[in-house]
Image (cartoon, rainbow, N blue to C red; front, side, top):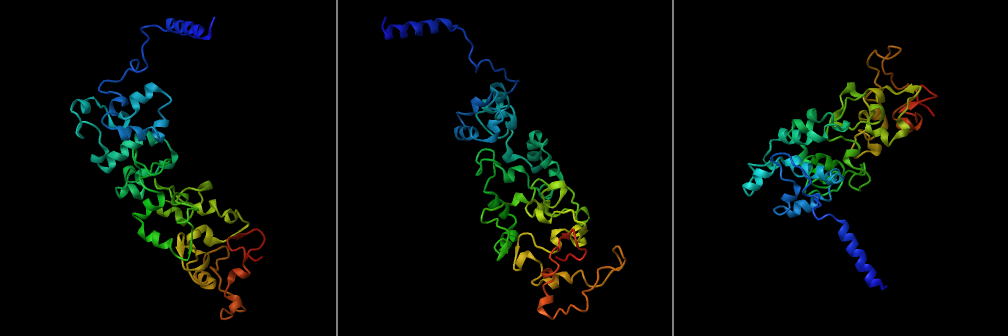
Length: 315
C-alpha cells in the first residue's frame, strides 16, 4: 500500500472522529448583559487591539479565554454594546480622556489597590496636585514596555521637575542622566511611608528602604549600621542634613564647599541636650581652623556616619 493511500485513509479517519456540531470556543463564551466581548473592538480600533496584545494587561488575562472576553477592553471601558450600536462616541462608553482626575484614579485602583507600594497614593503630593495614573501611564501607546509610561522615566519626571533636571547637570551628581539609576530608585511616585528620620516627615515621596530606612542606604550599605556610637545628626536629620540628593558644586554632594564649615553648623557649643547635657561641643582649642590640616575634619574623624570602636569617630 502506497504512502499516499495511507495518508488519505488517515485523513478520513480523523474527519470522522470530529463531531459535526462541535461548538467553537468563541460561541461558548457567555458574556454579561451589555457586554460584547473584546473581539468586537478590533474592527474600529485595530492599532489599539494589536498594541494591547503586547502589554502586561493582556498577559494577565490571556491565560483564560473567558476571562479575556469578559474583562479585556470592557474591564476598563465598561459594557460596549451601546457604544457599538451608536457606532462610536464617548458618551456611551467609559472614556478616560473625559474623566476627572479622581475618577481616573478610582478606575485604576479597582485592580491596582492591592499592591503595598500604592497604599499611600490617595494622600501623595501627586494626587493632591491632580497628577494621577493617566498623566504618567498610557495603556495603549506606552513608551516603555514594563511600567507603561508615556515617556522614558527621566523625561517624564523632568517634564514637571525642571529644577531637579538642572541639579543633575551639576559637576557632582547622581548618575541619572547616564542611565546608571533612575528616579524611582529613590522615590515612590505613588506616595511614601512615614520616615524614621526628620521627626517622621518623609519629604518628596521617598521610597521605602529596608526597615523603613532612607533609600540612600540601599546603595550606601556601609553607612547603614547599627553602630555602637551613633552620629546624632545622621539619626535625627538623615543624609539630607549634610548632603544634597541630586547634584551640586561640592565634593561628595556636601551642602558646604569645605568640610569644617559643614561640621560647624552643629558643633557651635549651643544647646544643653545630649547624654551629658552639654550640647554639641566646640572644636578643641588645639585645633586651629586657620590651619589647613584641621579644616578637613573627616581626615581624622573617618567614621563620621557611625563607629563601633570610638565615640569621636576616629580611625
